[in-house]
Image 1 (cartoon, protein in one colour):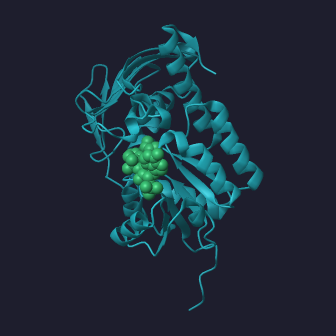
Image 2 (tube, rainbow, N blue to C red; image 1 turned 90 degrees about the vertical axis):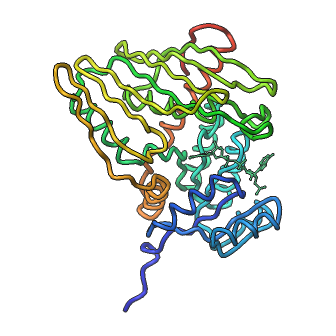
Image 3 (tube, protein in one colour; image 1 turned 90 degrees about the horizontal axis):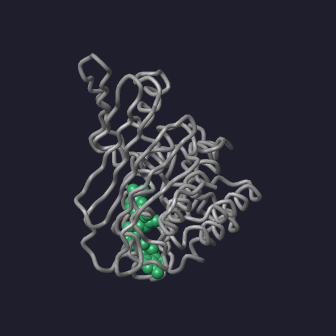
Length: 333
Ligand SMILES: NC(=O)c1ccc[n+]([C@@H]2O[C@H](COP(=O)([O-])OP(=O)(O)OC[C@H]3O[C@@H](n4cnc5c(N)ncnc54)[C@H](OP(=O)(O)O)[C@@H]3O)[C@@H](O)[C@H]2O)c1
């Protein structure tokens, strides 16, 4: 039996921090033949050890710097608080590692551009971790829209909210770029952009700000080329809701679980016909995300989500916050 070539080896990933979401990525990696988690780094040696033991990870580093210096790590997953994403992404790239950075990469388009400039200069892969974009349910939605299943897309409605029980959470920390739009509304932005198949031209928005200074609730209106309109809403102080509805000239498609994709299914209603439910086999989106970025690394190709998508996200989020602050409709970009 010959040795597997280095191109066939699973990509060796390190996790930067002991963030809760890291557990989901580890579970995804367990199902992947393209990726393996080999190390974790934390600001605390004890936390790194506990996380490594809990998740069966071989090496625990007592600092982020030590993880980035680990020669056996090829790629870094960055699940830090939002405001730390770009700094540590750039540090990882400068250490010669490919990077999968948690969403939202940053709310400032110029910082997202800086991160991709660093990746391009180093010849390394960088991708924003919107796991829902990798799920077959999402791919089916786009395929249905492309096939004209509901005619021309005219209206989009996207929601993501949940009641945030904790008083202390990175999501409520203004200095770390918390906020409902950053945490969950960014999925609605991603969903509206995907369904429209374009970038928004103008947006307006209203927010409700909490005592810590972050948006607890946001409603936004996005205008895309071709008179396509989208409404998005998100929140931390309301009941849990996940929904994506795309309305066309001849029907509509509704996804009741668009972001987590735990119970994937699309309901397609065409004018004058019975509603059709398109069932989708549940798949671990984190595994698919890791598979895609790991294959991009090995094959020297672009990942599904690269520079243009991340910039489109940041430009829209930035415009929504500007619109809310100015109580006005503003151009995107
Ligand atoms: N794709 C998804 O499904 C998904 C789901 C949830 C969250 N996320 C994203 O993942 C990121 C992390 O979210 P999370 O809920 O997992 O966060 P979390 O549990 O609060 O973890 C954040 C980690 O960052 C490190 N950290 C460094 N400086 C910190 C500071 N000043 N305050 C707090 N923590 C600090 C800590 O690790 P050490 O103590 O080990 O250094 C901490 O465990 C966010 O960007 C979020 O948007 C994505």
